[in-house]
Length: 370
Image (cartoon, rainbow, N blue to C red):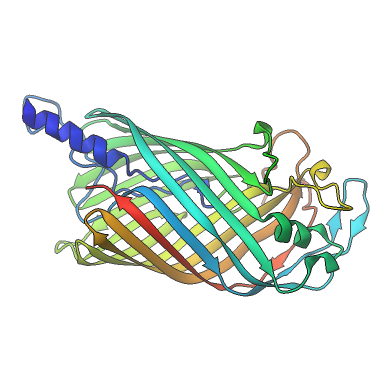
């Protein structure tokens, strides 16, 4: 009895580290880190055994994470902006951004941790500030002024439910609600929340392999999309190499130097839809119902290591590739669904913009699961 109690206690502790896979700038929408749980089954053969969501060799999961994200110089070319009354504001020349930087924080907490059901709640906050090389008020286009004065931020909550069906099969559901935009002292109303969700069915055939398939509703590339997702986690026989992937959201190859030092190489899609909510002198942005559809691809190398015990540091460096940074007009009503631009008859973007691609660095300190 004591042995079973200890196993449940361990499961509850490790559950708190479950990262969400809905996007929140990234965050979030369809991104699962499968270093979630310890052994959820009993060794008592008279009891039903359930699939363990963790395979051998995965990177440690994060309970609390506080980090800083920095992008180097690049330029933003703002296109012509069509206003609601039909007038057009010219985009002008591209403007140089010296840097883009901000704090990223998140945590996850267990609610229920049982052998046949695991439920966790999480929260996140990301802030992005734009440091322009010249005064953005020299442009008559409100995009530059809005980014310079207010920046972008995302805050949200999420929930994850893991349900093992038997000793090899499982299903997993994740949902999130995010508030993303140029809001500051005046918070945006709840009507601007963006909802994401994903559901997967999977199998864990061995202690070193796990796969699954599912469907996600996501804003990861900046605007609403419904996409299939494929989970694939595997560790080599000697535990030195591995794959941690939830395609298309992220794919990484892992090299384990030792259990306290790991290197990753791969990519991640990040993005969200940001409401341009704060008004500017001469521009009633809030009344225009404008949203920035920001999506990007981050090709990167990541080094994660233990500083002391369960306090780890993560250092990632790579190249940020712009996928989309266009502006939509979203009058109160359902979100615009373009299916990657393949659906005819959808409204045109209010503004088409272009960004060059900088190198970036992200550093975080994390409390990880035992």
